[in-house]
Amino acid sequence: MIKPLVLASNSRTRRALLENAGVDHVVYPVSIDEESLRESLAEDGVTPRDMADYLAEMKSLRASGSFTGDGIILGCDQILDFQGASLAKAKTISDAKSQLRQLSGQQHRLHSAAVLYEGGKPVWRHVGTTVLHMRQLSPDFIDQYLERNWETVQHSVGGYLIEKEGVRLFSRIDGSHFVIMGLPLLDILSYLALRGILTT
Image 1 (cartoon, helix red, strand yellow):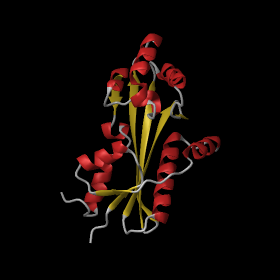
Image 2: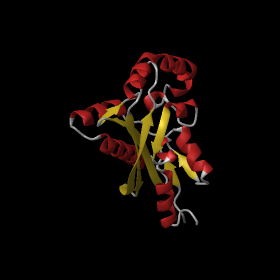
Image 3: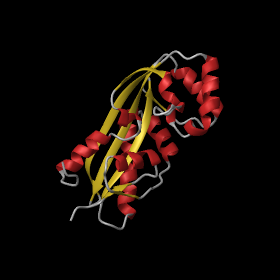
Image 4: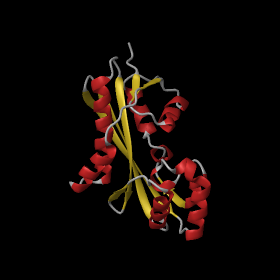
């Protein structure tokens, strides 16, 4: 019997990516104190890439400890890495404007981590990284962009959704579109196919 994939996330984007790829899964969201953990990890000098990996594992671990069925648990996390420091989601539109002014004309990285737990133990992990080169944005454009898009981007790190108007902010993107969306999908699909959970 093939074990079900259990997504330990309530992210509509991650759900849609799996659904569009034809991956049957169960949604089992868990909560961890991400803000406190991020602050603690940053104080300990943990890199943004390793921070994403750690937080993804914490979500898998939490779900693994409480999910009553027999499944393979998928925990995910994404961190925006700007000059070696993690950038948190803006809490206000004013904060988002400050972040975009900081990112304007610069490059940053998105690290999207995925960790699979099975039988209470990690069995697979991967961190995908994409480098995004942001155009030089005028203060007026940033203000107008956020006024138009704040309702849709306020829960997105960096203040943009690449699948919407946010794509206009960039001159070049090096890496996977799926990583930007918050899921290293191709790598997950390869593992699931190797396990026989997906047919190819």
